[in-house]
Image (cartoon, rainbow, N blue to C red):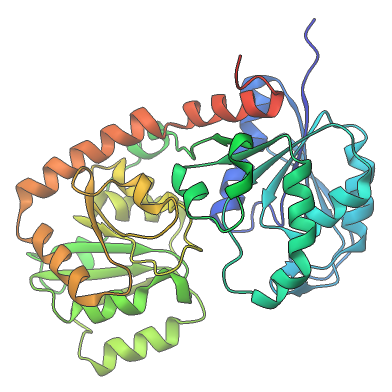
Length: 378
Protein backbone atom coordinates (compact mmCIF):
# COMPACT_ATOMS: atom_id res chain seq x y z
CA UNK A 1 0.00 0.00 0.00
CA UNK A 2 1.43 3.40 -1.04
CA UNK A 3 1.93 5.83 1.81
CA UNK A 4 0.00 9.08 1.54
CA UNK A 5 2.13 12.15 0.90
CA UNK A 6 1.73 14.40 3.95
CA UNK A 7 1.65 18.04 2.80
CA UNK A 8 1.61 21.16 4.96
CA UNK A 9 0.34 24.15 2.97
CA UNK A 10 1.56 27.44 4.46
CA UNK A 11 0.23 30.87 3.51
CA UNK A 12 -0.83 34.18 5.04
CA UNK A 13 -4.56 33.51 4.73
CA UNK A 14 -7.14 31.02 3.51
CA UNK A 15 -10.70 30.99 2.19
CA UNK A 16 -13.03 32.83 2.69
CA UNK A 17 -10.30 35.46 2.51
CA UNK A 18 -10.44 36.84 -1.06
CA UNK A 19 -7.26 36.91 -3.15
CA UNK A 20 -5.56 35.23 -6.08
CA UNK A 21 -3.04 33.31 -3.98
CA UNK A 22 -5.75 32.30 -1.50
CA UNK A 23 -7.80 30.92 -4.39
CA UNK A 24 -4.80 28.82 -5.46
CA UNK A 25 -4.07 27.56 -1.95
CA UNK A 26 -7.68 26.46 -1.58
CA UNK A 27 -7.57 24.68 -4.96
CA UNK A 28 -4.31 22.92 -4.12
CA UNK A 29 -5.45 21.92 -0.64
CA UNK A 30 -8.78 20.48 -1.76
CA UNK A 31 -7.68 18.80 -4.98
CA UNK A 32 -4.38 17.33 -3.78
CA UNK A 33 -6.36 15.53 -1.11
CA UNK A 34 -9.28 14.58 -3.35
CA UNK A 35 -7.52 13.65 -6.59
CA UNK A 36 -4.07 12.53 -5.40
CA UNK A 37 -5.03 10.99 -2.03
CA UNK A 38 -2.57 13.25 -0.22
CA UNK A 39 -2.94 14.13 3.46
CA UNK A 40 -3.15 17.93 3.31
CA UNK A 41 -3.19 20.33 6.25
CA UNK A 42 -3.20 24.12 6.05
CA UNK A 43 -1.52 26.63 8.36
CA UNK A 44 -2.31 30.34 8.00
CA UNK A 45 -2.80 33.36 10.27
CA UNK A 46 -5.97 35.02 11.45
CA UNK A 47 -6.93 37.99 9.27
CA UNK A 48 -7.41 40.06 12.41
CA UNK A 49 -6.46 39.85 16.08
CA UNK A 50 -7.82 36.77 17.81
CA UNK A 51 -7.14 33.34 19.21
CA UNK A 52 -6.15 30.28 17.19
CA UNK A 53 -9.03 28.66 15.31
CA UNK A 54 -9.16 25.16 13.82
CA UNK A 55 -11.71 24.38 11.11
CA UNK A 56 -12.53 21.76 8.51
CA UNK A 57 -13.48 23.39 5.22
CA UNK A 58 -14.53 21.18 2.29
CA UNK A 59 -12.65 18.29 3.86
CA UNK A 60 -9.45 20.27 4.52
CA UNK A 61 -8.09 20.77 8.05
CA UNK A 62 -7.29 24.48 8.41
CA UNK A 63 -5.46 26.04 11.37
CA UNK A 64 -5.62 29.82 11.69
CA UNK A 65 -2.93 30.92 14.11
CA UNK A 66 -3.61 33.62 16.68
CA UNK A 67 -2.46 37.01 15.40
CA UNK A 68 -1.40 40.32 16.94
CA UNK A 69 -2.33 42.18 13.78
CA UNK A 70 -0.29 43.12 10.70
CA UNK A 71 2.83 45.17 9.97
CA UNK A 72 3.77 46.04 6.38
CA UNK A 73 0.80 43.83 5.38
CA UNK A 74 2.44 40.83 7.06
CA UNK A 75 0.79 39.07 10.01
CA UNK A 76 2.56 39.18 13.38
CA UNK A 77 2.11 35.88 15.24
CA UNK A 78 4.38 34.06 17.68
CA UNK A 79 1.74 31.33 17.80
CA UNK A 80 2.24 30.73 14.07
CA UNK A 81 5.94 29.98 14.63
CA UNK A 82 5.09 27.49 17.40
CA UNK A 83 2.37 25.80 15.32
CA UNK A 84 4.65 25.62 12.26
CA UNK A 85 7.23 23.70 14.28
CA UNK A 86 4.58 21.36 15.72
CA UNK A 87 2.77 20.66 12.44
CA UNK A 88 6.02 20.26 10.49
CA UNK A 89 6.83 17.15 12.54
CA UNK A 90 3.95 15.35 10.82
CA UNK A 91 4.71 16.53 7.26
CA UNK A 92 6.74 14.98 4.45
CA UNK A 93 6.82 18.25 2.53
CA UNK A 94 6.11 21.85 3.46
CA UNK A 95 4.72 24.02 0.67
CA UNK A 96 5.24 27.74 1.42
CA UNK A 97 3.60 30.46 -0.65
CA UNK A 98 5.88 33.49 -0.99
CA UNK A 99 6.30 36.29 -0.21
CA UNK A 100 5.41 35.61 3.44
CA UNK A 101 8.24 36.76 5.77
CA UNK A 102 6.74 35.13 8.87
CA UNK A 103 6.93 31.71 7.19
CA UNK A 104 10.63 32.21 6.39
CA UNK A 105 11.33 32.87 10.06
CA UNK A 106 9.17 29.93 11.14
CA UNK A 107 10.96 27.55 8.78
CA UNK A 108 14.36 28.71 10.06
CA UNK A 109 13.33 28.15 13.69
CA UNK A 110 11.46 24.88 13.11
CA UNK A 111 14.41 22.54 12.66
CA UNK A 112 12.45 20.78 9.90
CA UNK A 113 14.64 18.35 7.93
CA UNK A 114 12.17 17.24 5.26
CA UNK A 115 11.39 18.56 1.78
CA UNK A 116 10.52 22.26 1.38
CA UNK A 117 8.92 23.58 -1.81
CA UNK A 118 8.37 27.30 -2.36
CA UNK A 119 5.75 28.76 -4.67
CA UNK A 120 7.23 32.10 -5.73
CA UNK A 121 4.24 34.25 -6.59
CA UNK A 122 5.91 37.67 -6.63
CA UNK A 123 8.84 39.74 -5.41
CA UNK A 124 8.13 42.24 -2.65
CA UNK A 125 8.01 45.43 -4.67
CA UNK A 126 6.81 48.34 -2.57
CA UNK A 127 7.89 47.64 1.04
CA UNK A 128 11.58 48.58 0.76
CA UNK A 129 12.04 48.92 4.54
CA UNK A 130 10.61 45.46 5.11
CA UNK A 131 13.12 44.00 2.63
CA UNK A 132 16.05 45.30 4.70
CA UNK A 133 14.96 43.05 7.57
CA UNK A 134 13.45 40.24 5.51
CA UNK A 135 16.16 39.62 2.90
CA UNK A 136 18.51 37.48 5.07
CA UNK A 137 15.61 35.18 6.03
CA UNK A 138 14.48 35.00 2.41
CA UNK A 139 17.98 34.11 1.19
CA UNK A 140 18.24 31.39 3.83
CA UNK A 141 14.94 29.86 2.73
CA UNK A 142 15.83 30.04 -0.97
CA UNK A 143 19.07 28.21 -0.18
CA UNK A 144 17.24 25.69 2.00
CA UNK A 145 14.43 24.97 -0.48
CA UNK A 146 14.47 21.76 -2.49
CA UNK A 147 12.45 23.29 -5.33
CA UNK A 148 10.94 26.65 -6.29
CA UNK A 149 7.68 26.57 -8.24
CA UNK A 150 7.11 29.46 -10.67
CA UNK A 151 4.04 29.87 -12.84
CA UNK A 152 5.77 31.26 -15.96
CA UNK A 153 9.31 32.00 -17.18
CA UNK A 154 8.53 35.65 -16.43
CA UNK A 155 8.44 34.91 -12.71
CA UNK A 156 12.12 34.01 -12.95
CA UNK A 157 13.35 36.51 -15.54
CA UNK A 158 11.53 39.40 -13.86
CA UNK A 159 12.62 38.60 -10.32
CA UNK A 160 15.37 40.44 -8.48
CA UNK A 161 16.06 37.42 -6.27
CA UNK A 162 15.85 34.16 -8.25
CA UNK A 163 18.89 34.60 -10.50
CA UNK A 164 21.07 32.31 -8.39
CA UNK A 165 18.42 29.60 -8.10
CA UNK A 166 17.60 28.71 -11.69
CA UNK A 167 18.48 25.05 -11.10
CA UNK A 168 15.77 24.84 -8.43
CA UNK A 169 13.02 26.53 -10.45
CA UNK A 170 10.21 24.39 -11.85
CA UNK A 171 7.37 25.64 -14.06
CA UNK A 172 4.07 24.94 -12.31
CA UNK A 173 1.41 26.92 -14.21
CA UNK A 174 -1.63 28.31 -12.50
CA UNK A 175 -4.77 26.73 -13.85
CA UNK A 176 -8.54 26.89 -13.93
CA UNK A 177 -11.16 24.22 -14.61
CA UNK A 178 -12.90 25.18 -17.88
CA UNK A 179 -16.05 23.25 -16.99
CA UNK A 180 -16.58 25.42 -13.91
CA UNK A 181 -16.82 28.45 -16.17
CA UNK A 182 -18.51 27.24 -19.33
CA UNK A 183 -21.38 25.58 -17.47
CA UNK A 184 -22.82 28.75 -15.94
CA UNK A 185 -26.14 30.30 -16.93
CA UNK A 186 -25.25 33.26 -19.10
CA UNK A 187 -26.95 36.61 -18.60
CA UNK A 188 -26.32 39.99 -20.25
CA UNK A 189 -25.25 41.55 -16.95
CA UNK A 190 -23.12 44.23 -18.61
CA UNK A 191 -25.36 44.85 -21.61
CA UNK A 192 -28.24 45.63 -19.26
CA UNK A 193 -26.20 48.48 -17.75
CA UNK A 194 -25.01 49.98 -21.05
CA UNK A 195 -25.96 53.59 -21.73
CA UNK A 196 -25.90 52.64 -25.43
CA UNK A 197 -26.65 49.00 -26.23
CA UNK A 198 -24.50 49.28 -29.36
CA UNK A 199 -21.37 49.93 -27.30
CA UNK A 200 -18.43 47.53 -27.22
CA UNK A 201 -18.15 46.33 -23.62
CA UNK A 202 -14.71 46.59 -22.00
CA UNK A 203 -14.28 44.83 -18.66
CA UNK A 204 -11.82 45.03 -15.76
CA UNK A 205 -11.95 43.25 -12.42
CA UNK A 206 -9.54 43.44 -9.52
CA UNK A 207 -8.72 45.34 -6.38
CA UNK A 208 -8.67 49.09 -6.86
CA UNK A 209 -5.10 49.60 -5.67
CA UNK A 210 -2.09 51.39 -7.06
CA UNK A 211 -0.45 48.62 -9.09
CA UNK A 212 -3.60 47.64 -11.00
CA UNK A 213 -3.34 50.74 -13.21
CA UNK A 214 -7.06 51.56 -13.26
CA UNK A 215 -6.16 55.26 -13.19
CA UNK A 216 -4.29 54.73 -16.47
CA UNK A 217 -7.31 52.89 -17.87
CA UNK A 218 -9.61 55.80 -17.03
CA UNK A 219 -7.23 58.27 -18.68
CA UNK A 220 -7.12 56.04 -21.75
CA UNK A 221 -10.90 55.86 -21.91
CA UNK A 222 -11.12 59.59 -22.60
CA UNK A 223 -9.64 58.71 -26.04
CA UNK A 224 -11.77 55.61 -26.66
CA UNK A 225 -14.76 55.65 -29.01
CA UNK A 226 -17.83 53.44 -29.16
CA UNK A 227 -17.06 51.59 -25.91
CA UNK A 228 -18.25 51.48 -22.33
CA UNK A 229 -16.03 50.41 -19.45
CA UNK A 230 -17.16 48.18 -16.59
CA UNK A 231 -15.02 48.09 -13.44
CA UNK A 232 -15.69 45.34 -10.87
CA UNK A 233 -13.94 45.49 -7.52
CA UNK A 234 -13.30 47.64 -4.49
CA UNK A 235 -10.23 49.11 -2.85
CA UNK A 236 -8.49 52.14 -1.42
CA UNK A 237 -8.52 54.06 -4.70
CA UNK A 238 -12.24 53.63 -5.39
CA UNK A 239 -13.29 57.17 -4.24
CA UNK A 240 -10.43 58.78 -6.19
CA UNK A 241 -11.22 56.85 -9.37
CA UNK A 242 -14.94 57.66 -9.15
CA UNK A 243 -14.18 61.33 -8.58
CA UNK A 244 -11.90 61.38 -11.64
CA UNK A 245 -14.56 59.75 -13.82
CA UNK A 246 -17.12 62.29 -12.64
CA UNK A 247 -14.79 65.26 -13.10
CA UNK A 248 -13.93 64.19 -16.67
CA UNK A 249 -17.57 63.58 -17.64
CA UNK A 250 -17.21 59.82 -18.08
CA UNK A 251 -20.35 58.80 -16.16
CA UNK A 252 -22.10 57.46 -19.27
CA UNK A 253 -18.99 55.56 -20.43
CA UNK A 254 -17.67 54.15 -17.14
CA UNK A 255 -19.65 51.93 -14.76
CA UNK A 256 -18.36 51.01 -11.28
CA UNK A 257 -19.92 47.68 -10.35
CA UNK A 258 -18.43 47.23 -6.88
CA UNK A 259 -18.06 43.70 -5.49
CA UNK A 260 -19.46 40.92 -7.69
CA UNK A 261 -20.15 37.37 -6.58
CA UNK A 262 -18.35 34.51 -8.29
CA UNK A 263 -21.38 33.79 -10.49
CA UNK A 264 -21.82 37.45 -11.40
CA UNK A 265 -18.14 37.74 -12.30
CA UNK A 266 -18.35 34.77 -14.63
CA UNK A 267 -21.44 36.23 -16.28
CA UNK A 268 -19.59 39.53 -16.72
CA UNK A 269 -16.62 37.80 -18.38
CA UNK A 270 -19.00 35.98 -20.70
CA UNK A 271 -20.85 39.17 -21.62
CA UNK A 272 -17.90 41.48 -22.25
CA UNK A 273 -16.20 42.00 -25.62
CA UNK A 274 -12.70 42.93 -24.43
CA UNK A 275 -10.91 42.29 -21.14
CA UNK A 276 -8.24 44.74 -19.95
CA UNK A 277 -5.53 44.20 -17.33
CA UNK A 278 -3.67 47.56 -17.23
CA UNK A 279 -1.33 46.78 -14.30
CA UNK A 280 1.71 49.03 -13.85
CA UNK A 281 3.97 47.12 -11.42
CA UNK A 282 5.33 43.57 -11.32
CA UNK A 283 3.34 43.08 -8.12
CA UNK A 284 0.91 41.81 -10.77
CA UNK A 285 2.83 38.60 -11.25
CA UNK A 286 0.38 36.55 -13.33
CA UNK A 287 -3.20 37.79 -13.51
CA UNK A 288 -5.51 34.77 -13.18
CA UNK A 289 -8.28 37.09 -14.30
CA UNK A 290 -6.75 36.84 -17.78
CA UNK A 291 -7.46 33.10 -17.84
CA UNK A 292 -11.00 33.68 -16.61
CA UNK A 293 -11.71 36.04 -19.50
CA UNK A 294 -9.84 33.91 -22.05
CA UNK A 295 -11.83 30.75 -21.33
CA UNK A 296 -14.90 32.62 -22.57
CA UNK A 297 -13.14 33.49 -25.82
CA UNK A 298 -12.38 37.10 -24.96
CA UNK A 299 -9.27 38.91 -26.24
CA UNK A 300 -7.10 40.41 -23.50
CA UNK A 301 -5.20 43.68 -23.45
CA UNK A 302 -2.37 43.46 -20.91
CA UNK A 303 0.86 45.32 -20.18
CA UNK A 304 4.50 44.49 -20.87
CA UNK A 305 5.54 43.88 -17.27
CA UNK A 306 8.70 42.03 -16.15
CA UNK A 307 6.52 39.32 -14.66
CA UNK A 308 4.30 36.46 -15.79
CA UNK A 309 1.53 38.74 -17.10
CA UNK A 310 2.57 38.89 -20.79
CA UNK A 311 3.30 35.13 -20.73
CA UNK A 312 -0.37 34.38 -20.04
CA UNK A 313 -2.12 36.24 -22.84
CA UNK A 314 0.31 36.49 -25.74
CA UNK A 315 0.71 39.63 -27.84
CA UNK A 316 -0.79 39.17 -31.29
CA UNK A 317 -1.96 35.65 -30.47
CA UNK A 318 -4.63 35.91 -27.77
CA UNK A 319 -4.75 39.67 -27.39
CA UNK A 320 -2.66 42.83 -27.44
CA UNK A 321 0.15 43.94 -25.13
CA UNK A 322 0.98 47.60 -24.49
CA UNK A 323 3.56 49.56 -22.52
CA UNK A 324 2.63 50.09 -18.89
CA UNK A 325 1.42 53.50 -17.71
CA UNK A 326 0.76 54.67 -21.29
CA UNK A 327 -2.86 55.87 -21.68
CA UNK A 328 -2.44 56.73 -25.37
CA UNK A 329 -1.12 53.28 -26.34
CA UNK A 330 -3.75 51.59 -24.21
CA UNK A 331 -6.50 53.66 -25.86
CA UNK A 332 -5.16 52.75 -29.32
CA UNK A 333 -5.27 49.05 -28.42
CA UNK A 334 -8.85 49.27 -27.15
CA UNK A 335 -9.93 51.19 -30.25
CA UNK A 336 -8.20 48.66 -32.52
CA UNK A 337 -10.15 45.75 -31.03
CA UNK A 338 -13.38 47.72 -30.69
CA UNK A 339 -13.34 48.57 -34.40
CA UNK A 340 -12.53 45.04 -35.61
CA UNK A 341 -14.97 42.33 -34.51
CA UNK A 342 -13.28 39.71 -36.70
CA UNK A 343 -9.94 40.34 -34.95
CA UNK A 344 -11.63 40.05 -31.56
CA UNK A 345 -13.07 36.68 -32.56
CA UNK A 346 -9.76 35.34 -33.93
CA UNK A 347 -7.83 36.36 -30.80
CA UNK A 348 -10.63 35.18 -28.52
CA UNK A 349 -10.76 31.74 -30.08
CA UNK A 350 -6.99 31.36 -29.66
CA UNK A 351 -7.33 32.58 -26.05
CA UNK A 352 -9.83 29.84 -25.14
CA UNK A 353 -7.68 27.18 -26.82
CA UNK A 354 -4.60 28.38 -24.91
CA UNK A 355 -6.33 28.07 -21.54
CA UNK A 356 -7.51 24.54 -22.28
CA UNK A 357 -4.11 23.35 -23.52
CA UNK A 358 -1.68 25.26 -21.26
CA UNK A 359 -3.53 26.43 -18.15
CA UNK A 360 -5.98 23.64 -17.43
CA UNK A 361 -6.34 22.93 -13.71
CA UNK A 362 -5.48 19.24 -14.20
CA UNK A 363 -2.17 20.10 -15.90
CA UNK A 364 -1.30 22.51 -13.09
CA UNK A 365 -2.10 20.01 -10.33
CA UNK A 366 -0.14 17.20 -11.99
CA UNK A 367 2.89 19.50 -12.24
CA UNK A 368 2.57 20.61 -8.63
CA UNK A 369 2.20 17.10 -7.25
CA UNK A 370 5.32 15.94 -9.07
CA UNK A 371 7.31 18.83 -7.58
CA UNK A 372 5.94 18.34 -4.06
CA UNK A 373 6.67 14.63 -4.14
CA UNK A 374 10.15 15.10 -5.59
CA UNK A 375 9.26 13.20 -8.77
CA UNK A 376 9.31 16.15 -11.21
CA UNK A 377 11.97 14.39 -13.27
CA UNK A 378 10.29 11.00 -13.06
